[in-house]
Length: 156
Picture 1: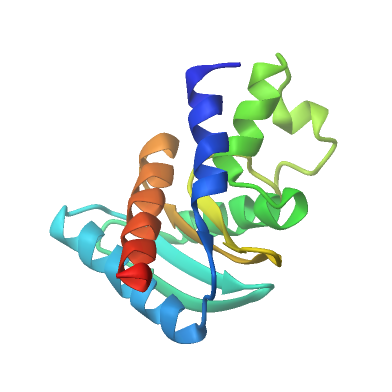
Picture 2: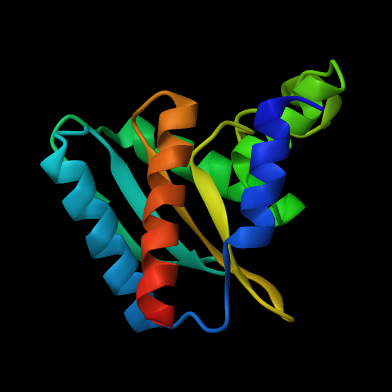
């Protein structure tokens, strides 16, 4: 198992909420937007509850292509219940190409980093949060960093 794969699996266990509401989606989305704007990142950000997009924003330099990537990565999270980066890394660790071996339309599904499930303890995945516009690991890490901060605020 690669170091990255181990890290992604550990994040999956770590990033779980006791609750996550529409107000939390707004707070988390605003936190992501502020962090990205402060760093001058050209990203689109989205949060979903199930199929419903409940938060969306694009910063200068992002394009409609980023929205397409968000949708494709979100479909991976919905289908597999895991972070889009983790799904892609699991395929790579087996020496497989997601676009070929998943037998899913690559125009609809992208196992690239940037969308992470919103997981409720004892209940499972209820939504997802994602970023698109940076290299895939940077997209993923931005989301994870802000999810961690949101979790700390909920506990504190």
